[in-house]
Image (cartoon, rainbow, N blue to C red; front, side, top):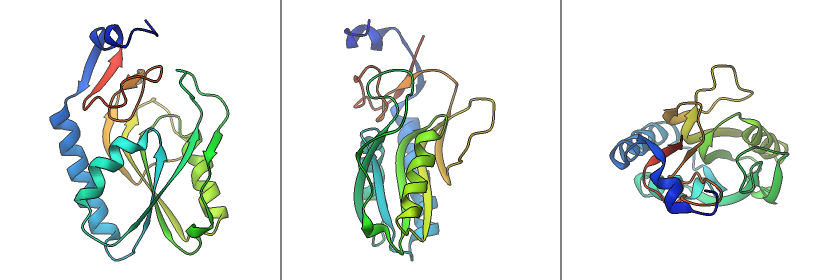
Length: 178
């Protein structure tokens, strides 16, 4: 099934519809605007997963901000996490800034811890985290997001930036493997 994206989609359960995802992003935009409208933050999108979320969120933020991206992953096209691998690390332009990290999912939290710590080491004044989704693992995580759009069951999910074997990041809904 790994090489058959249509079969993956057909055999997956719908977790959140496009309407539910869009409403969650709009709600997050309202919260973020309320908290950061006067901070001129640097929004760092975590690629590739955060691309969908950032693309939907940015037009709804009506305050001055700057954007950049970074790339760090533990999955690299697989369904099990490994060590964090940096494709593009954050740069010095974080120094003295409020940084908002944008990502698709807070799963176990190890990648976000590494990214937050790197941002702080580079001089970020404050690091906030916004995730479209957070997985309910039934236990504490090493990091919590400041903004969470939707809570997910402890299943392998895809869509809205999250992939399954590299497929379906572009799906406007969230599904889970059976």
